[in-house]
Image (cartoon, rainbow, N blue to C red; front, side):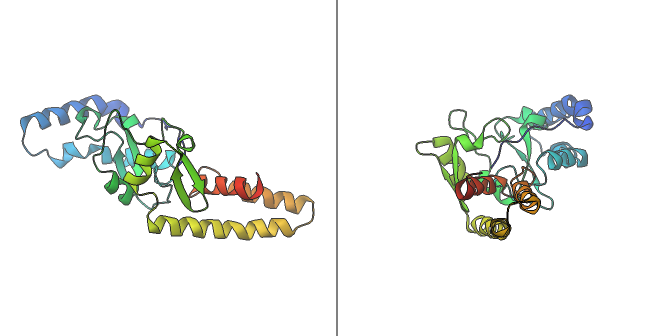
Amino acid sequence: MIHIHKGEEPEVLKNHKETWTKEYTEALETGDTIPNTIRYRYRHKDIKDALRKEAANKCIYCERKIPFGETDHIVPVSKHPELIVDWDNLGLSCKECNTYKGNYYDENEQLINPFEDQPDEHLLFFGPMILQRVGDMKGFRTVEKLRLRRTELIERRKERIEQLQGLIEQWNSLPEGKTKEITRKKIMEEAQNDKEFSAIVLAYLSQALGW
């Protein structure tokens, strides 16, 4: 998990957010079944495209690259329906993280919000593993609730590190010179925020090479 800068609010939300919010909350108050055309406006293509762009097509929680992804409400609509189409409350999530998170929300015991928090202040990254910092309850809640140590994630992070090791061995075998510099740059590019599991990769480079 990394800190993510919130992208620009799409025009469709700038133009319709107030009306859509009002229509949703009014429909909710009636107690009747809310039409999908009102309930799921946050799934609008322009909104989804903007979420995918700001997250570099990664789940904002586990950093897995996802082909489509789901629109997550950071603060669940079941708790705060007025945030149904609030841009700051929307993020791109994989199905698994979204399912595990569910409608969890506690004002006093929150999970890490990658748009507001610096995840590395709460989490530690060791190889393919993610742990909470000692005594950090926000980190603990986030790891456990989202199941960030689930088997499939550990396996994919392990594969990512093994791929990186090939580049590192190539760099290490090269004599000093331009080719070695280019290879080092290529390795560092693998830790950029748009890459899968960038937090894990950056931590690994720091631990293994002191970069």
